[in-house]
Image 1 (cartoon, rainbow, N blue to C red):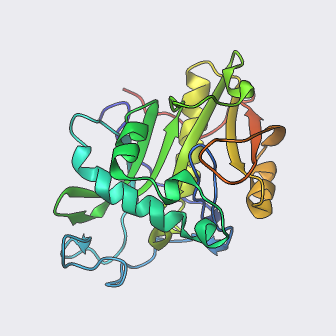
Image 2: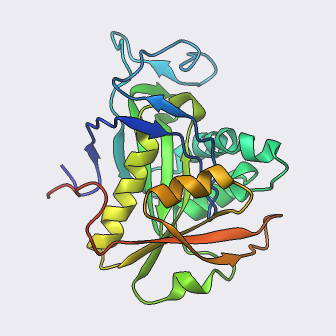
Length: 247
């Protein structure tokens, strides 16, 4: 088993659906039970026109497999990732906000996923004509073409962006899984702080991050959004996130 590809068997008592705008994080904050994986439904896994289908005999959604995005072999997944991002950001768009992930095209998705360390949560119980079905995504230390917050440039500070979970997959712990993974990965690389930017109007999301150890350290205005972003950061000194797999 490789360093970056492994299956997480998780048991979260509570899960919050998170959809994050790179570099901002957005999403609905509806707590749902995650005592067991929900049965697969035809509505979530239609089988026509190249959309997801359930593997025969699969009566439950399997635990997601987390792995690194590889631009050499995963280019075929980009249209599905872009569509998933648009679905994840639809709520924020409906609020009148203009997150990049809610409108970016495939070329921007490929550029972003090819920078930094991009992790995918793929569903082993479903497939499409192009390959795997991506249920979630996150990027650690994305290389931004635009000037970023000065906090992200401080020594010992890592950052993450483009955290998104497909709305059809909420309640399965995928958001926490991705977040825990980048916290652990950043700490393993020597970071002592992990930062993020999020849309200031999203008070529910701000409270969510504050409950999980993040604090407001600055504000920033990205050139491609129509809102001010809060810069939040979490100390990694105490040891955080999911354990990285052994090689």
